[in-house]
Image 1 (tube, rainbow, N blue to C red):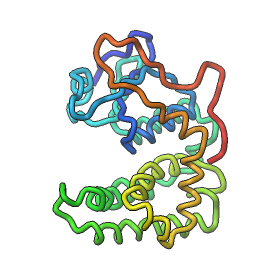
Image 2 (cartoon, rainbow, N blue to C red):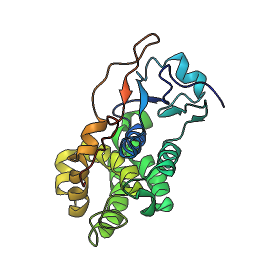
Image 3 (cartoon, helix red, strand yellow):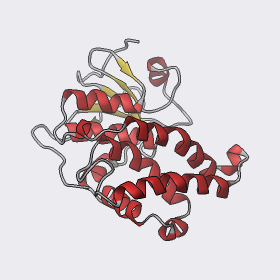
Length: 225
């Protein structure tokens, strides 16, 4: 589908600050130095421009400067990193692990966090989610990040979801048998990169002046997770 970019000539990113899918897209855009017009979406009042760009109406959605629409978060990450990958994130990739996060772990996360919405037993799904976290913990017992000693696309794609899982019951998570996951998660949450993508913005409305997302030209967001 082709639409049009923003009035600045930059790509447009429809996002929601707390959505883990949107977080990982913003992480990749920020680390690659990709500047865009950020349009914060209120999920209960999705703008017509978002729905025109992507009928599924979920964030993130990116409209490139040439009008191409990219409406899957992992595709936004790979598109940005394919153009510029200053930290070599694509060298530390594991599509199967990302798929496991986006599949079974996300399924259990939703049913653990929102049992009333899904009619689910939250403790059953917490236990299932813990099995995935235990797999991550085993990896992290041998290296600081999921695919080596430095952060890569897998870490950025997965930690926003682990952040959400940890927040459901912080006391339980603090005692869960995944110490390496806790250390890894804390490192990402305390990183300059994460701070840079979590700036609060008001919901976008047509006619608002462009809100530019991304580092200042010539500057990069650095700092190990």
